[in-house]
Image (cartoon, rainbow, N blue to C red; front, side):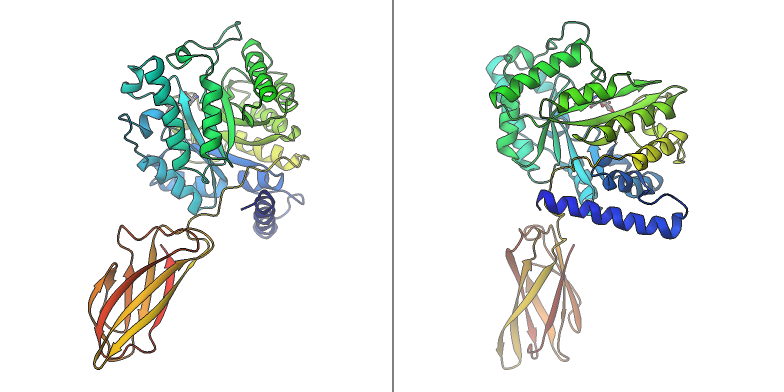
Length: 444
Ligand code: 9MR
């Protein structure tokens, strides 16, 4: 899907949200969205949340997620310890759960994070020098390749700068492999997933200070040397308020020619609602601010235990901070830069089933060819309606329900995934006459 198509998709969903708002919301100003995602989309931006695979089965949680957000970040599931627990052995189950949920609900996915000094698997912690560098590079390439086309933005590198006044790099095993580790990672990520936006992400960088200036200088250097960096993420774990130069800080990065994103927003303290509004207004005022992600859904989901820094309380009720954000989104005048395109979710392009027959006196073999439509599918369900008198006696390459009349078929584990426009086949043998079989396919 092109950037323009995404832009119009966002416009369509915004228009749909507006229509719903007019019917059930009533009274709100024209152009006022009624959910965070729809309101942000009206301004060409996303509104996301960090989520956990383990909570998708929690009904309150999933209801809020599906209603309010149009981007998700796996809170832990794409980190190095989760995706490569043993060297060269990749494990994407929990991350896939999030990606599949998001894509089947029309949400974009923000990838977090390819390289970070924390949450490394034990084997990586024990490496150094070129062995570690090779492992880092392989990790970036493998994970970004696996998710190619499904991630709107990658945090390629997370938290590589030191706290305090030095403005320099943080010491870590990664840094000790050589100062060029960050640019190497960005180049590899670009090769692996050319359409994802590539971000550097950090905390305590939310105002103009030594740390954010160190990152600013790195970005300026990368841009001047053609290192492929597209954006900077500002985590924004805040207490009481945003720095007064929050917007100015975003803007100075934008002026370097990169996008900016608010990536892990949570705010504790008594002036929480005002601070959330200020952060939201700042993003809306910077046209290169692509969107905002809050770091969790309900207060009870937050890593900041007991600080209640999120937009929904532990029971899932909207807090004053929620209203403050929604109002600030709706009041925004900017048009924003939409998140980059990711191809349509699996199955949205449908599938077709075509039957060919080899008939003999008293029986036949039917071969059913399934073709994916304009997007890939991860599984399929076919129904064949057999002429009366025909009875299935055997079948291959599919699971079957029934033997006559309406017979249901689903993929087996090796033939469910079909790329856009590609085909697979299954077949069955039956008694009777096959002429006139009707077959229909739906992605599963
Ligand atoms: O929210 C995450 C928490 O569940 C993990 O235990 C923790 C482990 O370090 O990481 C938290 O997320 C961090 C994010 O990945 C990077 N920026 C700081 C976040 C909060 O600690």
